[in-house]
Amino acid sequence: MPMRELGVDDTLGILGLPWVRPRRTSAGLGWQGLYLSAQDELPYRKAFDGAPSHLLILHLDGPVTVRRGRRGLTEVSRVPPGGLFLHPAETTLDVELGGPLKTVHVYVADDILRAAVGDDHVPVRLNEELGVTDPLLEQLVLALDGVVREGAPAGRTYADQLVLTLAGQLAWRHSNVRRAGSEPLDRATGLTDRQFTAVRDLMEARLGEPLPLTELAAAAGLGVSRFARAFKDRAGRPPHRYLMRLRVERAARLLRTGTQPIAEIAAVCGFSHQEHLTRVLRAQLGTTPAALRREG
Image (cartoon, rainbow, N blue to C red; front, side):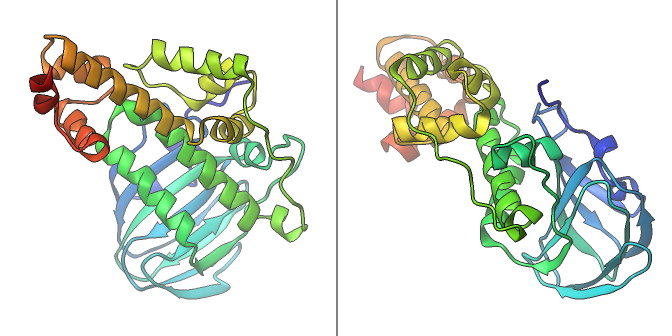
């Protein structure tokens, strides 16, 4: 059964408090198995029932004192900027925030963590952690928040790749899987010629649309986690980067040979707007749409 997009009803309840003011969320972006919210929080103390999703909170400023527990406040930490708060699904929480704070919350479905391990039958329970730091997790959360801020439909494949990497880091470094001494399952070999052609054909046919990683994986007949590794082994880059290269190549070809307005070319090639196309061309080719058009 395919995973669905998570919403605020799948969260612990912190986001519904009157003293928590979300500034942006991933609602409506179609992200399967994950919900992200960036907000300003004022001091509070509250008890929550468990939620169906696992919770990761990144502190953007501080330091701030946080107390937590299950039935009473038994753990306290002075959490610095970049500090993390991790809480497993289906687990009650008592928490007290000691000062105003800017945060990014990431809620992750259990299916996502199990998929990252590579075995749907392996139970994965997120650790209860407070004030820890993990530079990779921090950068992944900030990158996902950047996709939400940009709001570009073309970022769907990139966001799916970020979610997969984030779930893998949570599963292997911040869960019972790590404590049990397990190792990741077999590393995928590269895609076959048939699989790679099927995936590339799908990318070419839908360059102008959001393209979830799940659909690319389905074209290859693989699970998402295995597909991402296998595709990189074959193509030398992750799916979202390969897809971006195809979009750049088509845009450059249309600019050199056609007469469509630049904004239309940006849209049909999967860029959110003309400025997005300009920014990517400058970064990847060292040129601009207008310059490519003059080259003919």
